[in-house]
Amino acid sequence: MLALALFGGLVASWAIGEAALTAIDRPTPGTLALPTGIVLLVSQVAGVVEHLARGTAHCLLGGSVLAAGIALRLWAIATLGTGFATALAPSRIVRTGPYRWMAHPSEIGLVAAVGGTAILLASQAAALALAVLIGLVAVRCRREDVQLRACRGAPDPTGPMA
Image 1 (tube, rainbow, N blue to C red):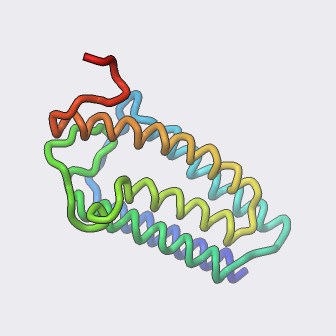
Image 2: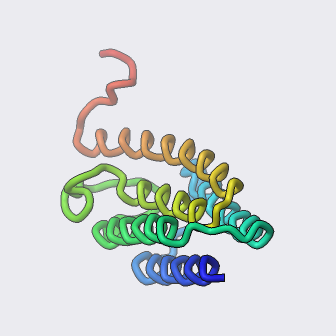
């Protein structure tokens, strides 16, 4: 029961934090926001169902990883401010907040949060959803990198040679 209470509290804080920090943003086609959201939802629901069936949990480690992932994601969103959106159209390169040390902290936080869910709830289903999420995040990060290079005026190194 402790694991579910911890999970519920952390996910509620995450939802409230993102709602407070972001504007209403309807996902545009091709952004992978919808499949990412679906995988996130599946990881959480499947994790709870599996936890209820098995009753095992790893509260300290899983709760810590989940909380750290949420904190990193919220910090990244707060740093970007109005620049945080599903449709990537960067007008500037951000080098403050967590972006000072890493690329894609919002995505890294998302992966950590789902990983923390899998650990906290001892859920193989959430771990499987994490594997799918990592693939989606890799594609999203690649697309973002291309857009950011274009924002800086740098050519895409994987594109056709000039």
